[in-house]
Amino acid sequence: MMCALTIGSLLTHLGITAYTKLGETLQLAAVARELAQALRAARNQAALQRQALTVHPLEGDWGKGWRVSQERDGQVLREHRLARPVKVVASSTREVRFSRRGAPVGVGFGGITLNICQRSGPGSQHQVVLSPSGRVSLRSDEGRRCAGD
Image (cartoon, rainbow, N blue to C red; front, side):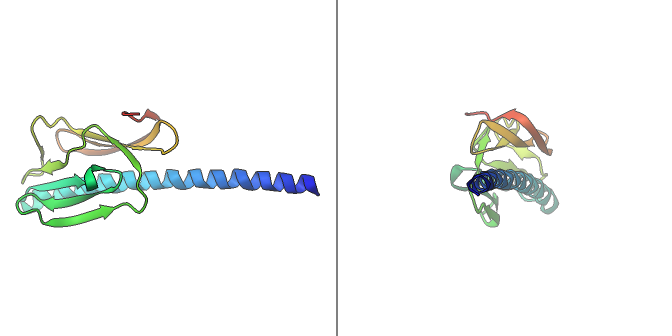
């Protein structure tokens, strides 16, 4: 009976650990998709409505969320605050600005890469990349290391 209880508790512990890791993996994938979609939507809206838009990280941290606002008057169009903050390592912490034509602008804008990172461990499974041309791509690769670790 004691062996059965020991084996049962061991299996329960392993199951809970795997479930927790799966939950974190799904959350990171969702954050990456939402961030990529927010950048695409801001770019498209800037071009369609012929107004410059800015996407800011909340409190200077992309891992807490982001806000899309009009550059002209600062009016907030959309804000996405993450329920649980995640670790996001960005090649640049500055905001992303889109011109009235939907092109990213800024002094020497060479694109931005946002690595959505695991809390435990140095790996990054998801990466959101905004190229200098304005194309937003979502990349997934378990072997990528988080820059800035």
